[in-house]
Length: 247
Image 1: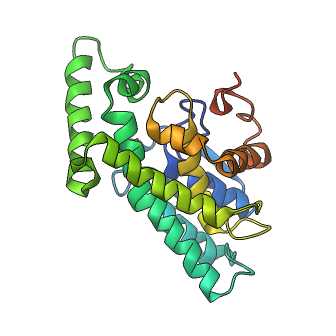
Image 2: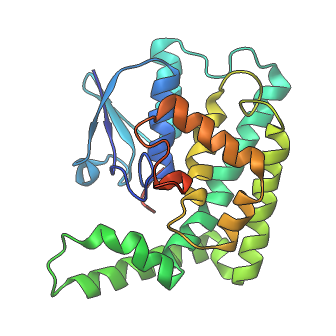
């Protein structure tokens, strides 16, 4: 049995991390049973989640989890795609993970109101006297990471503009298809859903969320994937009806 180490459901999402959500979907796409363990962060091989334990073999990073599934279980996430389509899918996956992701992090951690509604809740178990200090230290660390990446050096409106271009690109490629590249999911769908669903979470107010909501096919895509693979959260606060240490 595969054990997937996760943060757990936050903000009405299957997991607070889009990368953990991606790993969940990869396992579901491949038809592999797994159990979740929410106490593995301190044991993470690369200091971040997700990672899996597959019969004693630990694989860290959602992309290397994908490669492990493909190698060990012979599952081709991009079956049916030609070389060009595989290249497009990979390019989209890396755009949302290495660019759009940082806009999501900025939205959650660098906006004071969003931080207090969201990531600040992660520190509820820290003893009260230490909690404000720990929150401040971690928030500053995450904020600095966006600056080191480069996206955090821009003004708020500029970050929103860049994120909108990413979202519009995804929406244009998706078009009216049920999945990113056609009639069935490919590997990139796991990454795209993780990021799009995180941005659409109603708890976070942002022009970036507004941009995603203005693209009906992205909203419908989010809803389809929820209904198909995460029925336990479908129709919850994620649809409006009711971390940074991840990769």
